[in-house]
Every structure is written in structure tokens, then in C-alpha cells.
Length: 456
Ligand SMILES: NC(=O)c1ccc[n+]([C@@H]2O[C@H](COP(=O)([O-])OP(=O)(O)OC[C@H]3O[C@@H](n4cnc5c(N)ncnc54)[C@H](O)[C@@H]3O)[C@@H](O)[C@H]2O)c1
Image (cartoon, rainbow, N blue to C red; front, side, top):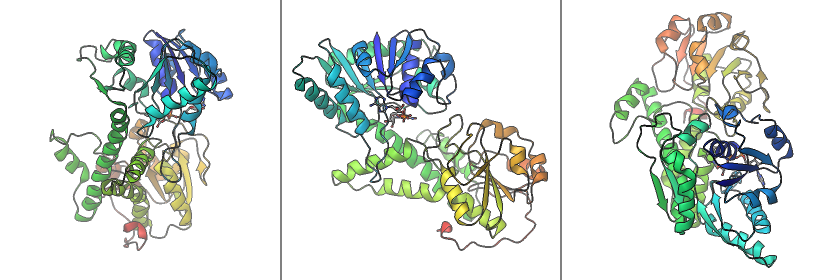
């Protein structure tokens, strides 16, 4: 099938490359000339495991020419960004521009226009209207239908997720359009490209447009709430002396709860959870529906980011003039995405308190923040008063922590992701503190109760 994908970010590029890999003839369109030039050399402008390999398909091409893209696809994906506005609502101007552009170039042969961007409920009908208006404006004939196909891939495992989805959601009224989408995804639904081809077929959930659009927001809001829940439990554990990792294991084995998304730490970030929860709250406000649970989910997460600062204050007391080393900056491992990363709030707070901040991240080479970026964990540890693990990159499991501890002014380690073994870190010479877990090792000076608002 001929497919066009408009927008070559994390979603559009991965979708386009994976659809080409499974046999479709794909043209990806982006208005960013530099990005398209890079893509045409076969290099992805983002870091995403397996993406370079998948991009080698001869059936995949890139262009800045929207008219060519619209002419090419029997299915046209809209996969542009929908970033948050200061009000929390989704900024749909890029979707709008693409919809108008499709309307300006679409011909009379039947096409399915797919909203893959995460868009406010009602956007399917709105996109249809925008396209029709542009077509009518030039007095042309057309034949198309709009389908909502929300994306659930995770940055860091986006290629894997595309070939191994838990479900595919298709929202729309037209059986013809839904049937075309089923054909498009057939090789994925039948697990031809899955890690385990013996698994049962991928469930395809067919809904109306509004329900498909709501599924995306509800899924992310639920996952964000689950993390905020376990973080609140972690903060209780911290005061009562329980270990949240043990608690999470104990509740996660209950099949009604499930063990995923119960990793306590400094909370969620990235380009999706914060903006999608805010957008859902904005939609609810527009319709007069209170969102007490989602309000609390966001507030808990915002406070949680600074738990590591609270632990630094507890151990180092005054942070002014101290040097703090951050291990990891991206909002999660295996991505270069820094959008709404907890690291950014931690850096700002440490700087406000007068600390000097250094950081090492395996992928980040530039950061627009008051931080000294270094090339290795060893350089990072040198003369630091404390290390804070911010992102749980796999390589942080295997560092020579004994060596790092010896290079530091104070061997203090705050594990913001609860991913290291306390006993091991103690043996390596650290005073180790995670989130909602008892500390390990000896502090060489008395602790104080911080009076900062962070404790609240
Ligand atoms: N990133 C994720 O993990 C993820 C997961 C699921 C859903 N989503 C949703 O998918 C959508 C895309 O997200 P993303 O992270 O890929 O965004 P992104 O910001 O990485 O990429 C968007 C791309 O669209 C291009 N673009 C914008 N306007 C354009 C236009 N008029 N013509 C052509 N290209 C244009 C930009 O140049 C950019 O390359 C968003 O709605 C997002 O919420 C993202």
C-alpha cells in the first residue's frame, strides 16, 4: 500500500520506517529542511534503538514537498507535534496547518487521513472540516475519510513497540476506511514482525472517533496516576521505615493491580505524560467535569521531582557552595528526549539553592541549563559532594562505584530511580539513599530536618 506520513518526529519517523519495513511504499514529509536532508542520508536525527537499521528500506523516502506526499498516499498519517500551551491545552496549530495543506493538494481518488498525533477529542471531525473547506475553496472534488489511530509507542523502545503493540485502536465511522487500516496493519496484527510470532493476533479495537481520541488520553492519565500513586506510597514508606520496592512487589503480584509502572522514584516526564494529562484536564474543564484525581497526579509528580533535593539537604545540610553530580539527564533511558525531564527541575532547584551542578548523560552533549556537562562518570565524581542518579540508563548498573566514591569529597549517593542495590552501594563506600527505602551506609555527620518547603 502507498503510505504518506506527515511529521518525522519520534512518532512519524518510526511509523514511516516500520511501515516501509513491513512492505508498504512510504513517503515521509517534514517541513524542516535540515531534518529531511539528514534523513535522506539514512541517519535518524533522534536517538532510538534499532531505528537506523529499520530506515535502510528502499521503500522509504523523505521529502519537504507536502503536495508530493499528499498525492502519494492511499493512507496519509498526520504525525506532527501537539505541544502544550501555557494553559495546559494542546496546541493544535501544526495539525491545522497540515489538514489545510492536505485540503489544498488532495485529488479525487479515495484516501484515508489518519490522525496519529495525540489530539483533543473532536479533532477527527475538525480535521475533516478543515480539509473539506480547503477543497471547496478551490472548487475541487475529493473523496476521503478521517480515522483516529492513536499511538502508544514508548520512546526508547519505539521500534519494538510498533512491531509488538498490545493493541491497535482505530476510531471512525466508515467501514471502508477501517478496512483499509486493517489491511495496512495486517502484518503487524498477525505478528509477522513480532519478537514472538507465536503470540495470538494483536487485538484491534474499533471505536467511534471520540472514543479513540479519549483512549489515548485515558491510557496516559492512568499510567501517570499509577506512578504518582506509588510515589506517594514511597513518601509514606520514607517516614515509617518501610521499603517501597518491597511494597510494590507485594501489591504488583496482585493480578488486579499488575507490577508495571510501580517503580517509585522522581516521577514521570517527557513529551507525553505531562502534556496529555494537562490536555485531558483542560478538556474536562471545558465540559464542567472536575478532575480532582488528575490534579493530584500532577501535583504529586511535581513535588516528587524534588525528593532528591530533600535527601541532599538531609545529608549535606547546606547546599550552597556544594557540588552535585547528576547521573543521567533524559527523562528516561534510551532516548535523547529532554522535554519536561525531571532533571531540568532538579537543576533549577539546586541552582536556586546555590549548589554547583555537574552532569553526565550517555547521549546528551548540549544542554541549555546552568550545568557543566562532562564526558564520563569518573570525571563527574571528581570532587563532588554527592551523586544523584536521575535517569536509569542500563550502563549505570555496572559502574565502578568504589572508584567513584574514592574520587568524591563526600561519598553520598542519592538514587532517584531506586535501581541500585543498597548493600552493594554501601560496600562500595557510599552512604546510599533511594526514594521510599531505608538508607544504607554511614553518614559521617549528624542529619537535620530540612525546613524547606520541599518537605511539604
Ligand atoms: N513522542 C512520543 O513518545 C509519542 C508517543 C505517542 C504519541 N505521541 C504524539 O504524536 C505526535 C507527534 O509527537 P512527536 O514526539 O513525534 O513530535 P516531534 O515534535 O518529535 O515531531 C513532530 C514533527 O512534525 C514536523 N512538523 C510540524 N509541522 C509540520 C508541517 N506543517 N508539515 C510537516 N511537518 C511538520 C516537525 O518538523 C517535527 O519533525 C504528538 O501529538 C504526540 O503527542 C508522541
